[in-house]
Amino acid sequence: MDLQKRNAELVDQLKTDFVGRNEPNVAWGNAISNFLMLPGLRGFWPLSTYDQNGDTYDLSGQGRKLSYNGNPVYQNTGLIPWLSLDGTGDYLSRADEASLDITGLETMVSIAGLTLGGWYNFTNLARAEGGISKWVTAANNSYALYKSVANVLNFIITNDGSTQIFVSSSVSATANKWLYWVGRYVPSIELAVWVNSTKTVNTTAIPASIFSGTSPLTIGTGPDMAGKISLQFLCASALSDAVINSLFHQTRALFGV
Image (cartoon, rainbow, N blue to C red; front, side, top):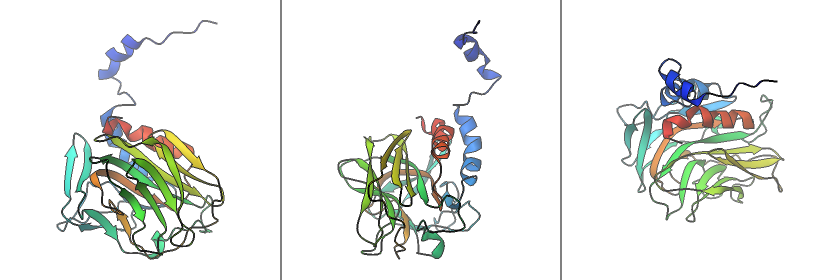
């Protein structure tokens, strides 16, 4: 059998006529639609749209606007919209409501669970910092993305409001570099965390549900984060590996990863 070899030089020459898959302009054009296709989407905040008060808008169609706290600054680099957080009182928040109390017991969902995350860039590694979370009120917590002072990227849930059940990524944060950070909970089966394309799993004593706490939903606190955030999402469904990995590969070119 004759197999035709890939002609890398020809591929490079044709880039002006055929847009490459891993090309920032393609990722920019597809990013919003990719996130809006996520099953069980409860909120999607690209950080590109905000009002006169600095509150950022949810594009899921469910109207979960996040309130502006502190003095973060909306910015963009190239094609990326992002929010700059200074690590001192800068974060986004939304008060507790039923649709944010994702427990894994939702009977209308064929693959019940929780998936959340987005793109992050940490400027100061010597501190604990929170990503998208519902974990700021003692004994009334639910779920969180949390970076430790040792730069370990974790996904945490609780089934009683305070006891931590977590999975820690095998990949550590690197200063001033964008990374894709996603957590997934599958009831009674696993917790998983992704950093870029690397998945780490915990299958030990995973609870059947997440505690429905009264903590607000926040992005960039618990504790306060110093850095940048972009393309944040929350789903009341345990998204498949294929979907989570596809989101990474479909948007990575925007972030130079």
